[in-house]
Image 1 (cartoon, rainbow over the protein chains, first blue to last red):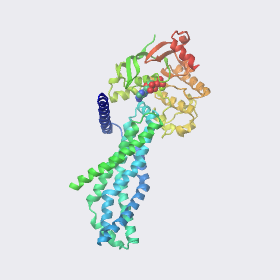
Image 2: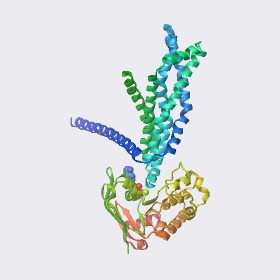
Image 3: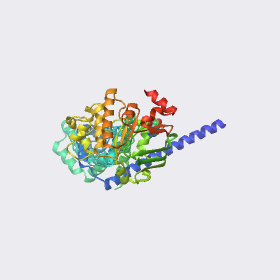
Image 4: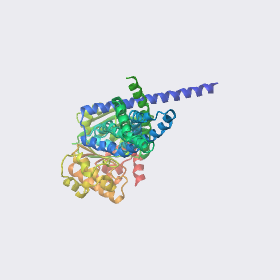
Amino acid sequence: MTRLLSSALALTKRLFKIIFSFFHSIGEIVDFFLNCVKYSITEKFYVNIFLKQFLKIGFNSLPVVGLTSIFTGMVLALQSYTGFSRFSAESAIPNVVVLSITRELAPVLAGLMVAGRSGAAIAAEIGTMKVTEQIDALKTLSTNPFNYLIIPRILAGIISLPLLVIVGDIIGVMGGYLICVNLLNFNPTVYLQNTYNFVQFIDVFSGLVKASVFGFLITFMGCYHGFNAKGGAQGVGQSTTYSVVSSSILILLMNYIITSFFFRL
Amino acid sequence: MRKKKIIVKNIYKSFKDKVVLNKLNLDVYESESLSIIGESGSGKSILTRCIVGLLKYDNGSISFGNLNNINTLNDKEKMNYMSKFGILFQNSALLDSLSIRENLKFASKQDSFNKILNEVGLPNSILEKYPSELSVGMQKRVGLARAILKKPEVLILDEPTTGLDPIIARQINLLIKNLVKKNKITTITVTHDMESVYEFADYVAFLKNGIIEWYGNARKINKSRNNSMINFIKGIN
Ligand SMILES: Nc1ncnc2c1ncn2[C@@H]1O[C@H](COP(=O)(O)OP(=O)(O)O)[C@@H](O)[C@H]1O
Ligand SMILES: [Mg+2]
């Protein structure tokens, strides 16, 4: 009986510990965010670092985003043909393709790809700087690491993701076009006309809003986990993993939240 | 007449259950070279990080000039405070995505680094190289150049010779001796290397169990009767 009680006690203690550490890390994340806001207002902005990161996150991710988009567009055309041909609604394929790509697939897939690519790289780079005392060195050289390392990266993420997604939108629609025209014997002009007449501003716009939010989540999580890396190489590896996992989950969560927000509009 | 520059009073620092500094007292005097020695893990780096302001202590106070308790400084004041120090970090901590020239620019906006490179015994050709292209000894020299370039009030050297082979370690010790003694810079050196102590320390503080167990003139270190320090010195010789 006492044994049961004591093990129940231990379990509750453990549970409280987990809950406590959960809220503790939420607090730390909020604190980190507020620091970013504060220093971006009160202190220097490093334009060259921002441009460098913009190229790194945006331009260098073009091939990956392009590839994922074109294959997704192609698969989308094929799959919806399978379904729609069963009740002779093939003509709706261009509409489905453009809607799914712009509203959903281009932002989410670009987000996940960039999280794996740039988010991991950011966490690894900043984490290494942390554990080798380079960040401490910056502080003693009158350089605020938030302004020098973190704010330019986050801003680059917020701006470059929507641009990537615009490219992804176009390439994705092209993927659907390629399949429909070459494989399913659609009329090219009709396909494009259909797409163009059907798509609305809000479709593209909601996708770009998502992309911006994802860009923030990816770079913010990369910076946060890198900045809090501890120990040696192992700690850096762990921060990279945390950064990719947390930003991927947050991307999917925020995707739902933003979708339901635009759904009500 | 010795003049106090930094006064560390009763500082206490712990990580969770582990007490690292336990009401430690230490004075650092102007224009003197102080060596802090002690076993690995005894808290030497933590102590210097507290002094520099990179780490907050839990209790006690550190005063510097007319600043009374540096724990209470706000962001701006803290940044100002830190800029009084030139630090050679344990692994040099050069920014590895930048060339040596860009690294040095963090310490001083000047365009020509000929003089400083000459002082630390490096050729000008390394300016366009990256830290990873230099040997560990050369990285230390660059780190040292970066630390003294901003003409700090206090120079901090964290294990300047650890991880170097004996010949390079000797060169670095002599280099530090030249720089520190010639310019009479207030210096705190954390070290394991008794050679460093004999070369350029004026005073020595032995850190153990969270306090300074022995403090005295570097030339009298061998006459000390503190057993744990004698064992420490014997153990590493
Ligand atoms: N961030 C930290 N979290 C927990 N313990 C730490 C941390 N930093 C240092 N320590 C502990 O404090 C002690 C002193 O470390 P340090 O000052 O680096 O030793 P050293 O004298 O070798 O420079 C070590 O035992 C180390 O394990
Ligand atoms: Mg140390």
